[in-house]
Image 1 (cartoon, rainbow, N blue to C red):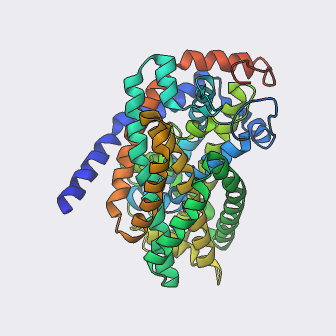
Image 2 (cartoon, rainbow, N blue to C red):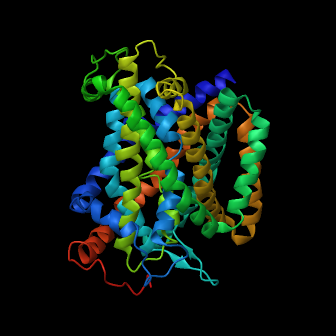
Amino acid sequence: MENFSAIVEQVSAILWGWPMIILLLGTHLYLTVILKFPQRKIFKAIRLSVVKDKSGSGDVSQFGALATSLAATIGTGNIVGVATAVALGGPGAVFWCWITGVFGIATKYSEGLLAIKYRVKTADGTMLGGPMYALEKGLKMKWMAILFCIFTAVAAFGIGNTVQANSIALLINETYSISPYITGLVLSFATALVILFGVKGIARVCGTLVPFMAFFYIIGCLIILYVNKAYVLQALDLIVDSAFSAKAAGGGFVGTTIMMAARFGIARGLFSNESGLGSAPIVAAAAQTRNPVRQALVSSTGTFWDTVIVCALTGLVLVSSVIAHPDIDHTQGAALTKAAFSKIPYVGSIILTVGIVTFAFSTILGWSYYGEKAVEYLGGKKLIIYYRLFWIAAVFVGSVLNLALVWGIADSMNALMAIPNLIALLLLSRVLVKETNKYLWSGNIDDEDPECV
């Protein structure tokens, strides 16, 4: 097992080396420039996300698609994932995580646009889309579409299922001494109640759960920052300095290399916001929208909320807490998170528990849809019921087994998913520019595209 762990770590290190960092950040920057900084429209995008587009066709509302996407992205990556990045890459990892989110808005926008542009309608009226359809229809590369779906189906059981279930079970066991077997059974039952109703059931639950859990968690972070107010500016300074200087350390931290800070910050940023991963456009394709750009804008807000706001708050909370309390163990992600939230008198552990449970459970729901559509692309609709049953069983397995290796495997699968998706984004960049100029920069955002409606 130790040898296998070493192999997984080596593979993850190779996949998340400089080539992937350059490809990922390069794509973010390239799309930002050629699309004329769609980040400028983020507040308009937020307004569009809460307005139902009745003239468009689709399976769920734009907000329902966004909520499902956010449910999948706002998970343990925002809490334990950011803490792990800080533990392994130092305070500078927070900066790179945040940068991945800022420029990743353009990539998430582009993914949403292609999802609508190349989506298909089945005989029963269901909308299907995502990178596999962009690869097949836009680039005639069905073989790469198949590879993407295989990577997605495998990654889903790591990033979207067992990792999340394990985080919930461990936290509840450590906090309330409840057996992981009991937690696993409850989680499996709750998951079954939702996913057996398909995307509409998932979107309905996520539309209620996501706003609650995000608001609850942000309030908790703001309370900690108020308690640590004397150290917040120092934490900000340390985060920025550590991102660009191998010698930067202090406040209880040990110095790390720039490469380590960038690697873990970007890796956890992608794990958190999934910009460039290719998962979110799978549900974006189901949205009711009148043209590709409207849904692209709505999709882009997912990265804004997830990384620019939630992950940034988490990182600031963790770094300021270590500076304020140098005795905190910052070498272990979970321990660092627990110690930081314990500084809130009486309710700190409750906020952390509710945050992780709701974040992780919603991720299980969102990723069940991603994996389901990947399997459907590979083998047809007949496989869906078997996939759902297997997914429910995996929730229980993830709750009761030690899954330390899964984090490394999840990072590797994320990279393998991202590669074909990023290739599609780059090779279809002319389509992205054309559609963006037609609807966004020409003031035609309310126009209907006959292929969408």
